Length: 222
Image (cartoon, rainbow, N blue to C red; front, side, top):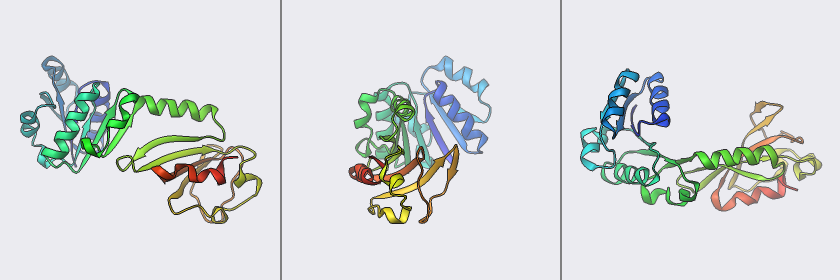
């Protein structure tokens, strides 16, 4: 698979190394020429280009039309949006992943700007903090499908209906818009089955429509 990464900072470099280890064809664009030259020596197997990924001509020179995935990983949200939009609208890249640096800008990173998947480090860290302290609360882990779907987690409290009523997954009668995809119990991931019962402190991972995230509350939140 051909992958183009925009941004030669620590995030872009880490992704490039991981992609090469997975035997992908990786091109990295870094606009600071001195940094790009240093990265060429650091990243054997990566095609490093000294180029501004916000410019159409540079993306064309990187043969973006043949790329399968673009990762906009710069430290500037405006740049990442421009790169995402150009990649999708001008070059028809099938999958565009964009980094969000400022959580306040998260609402912009959607299909209108060509973003298929956005990754917000601040929001992820916040969710992990919430996860550590919020038993019985619905925690948003990630937005998927241009924000139409959400991956959420609920840590079950003692008085959660699924626990107190000793109901199986099948007996919960969750709506079609909600699916349990995994349960983590005592640090062990479990594959949910219709006959599974839920216990206090279970971490329940669900995928839901964005407008239906609260529909699981009746089963998992007291």
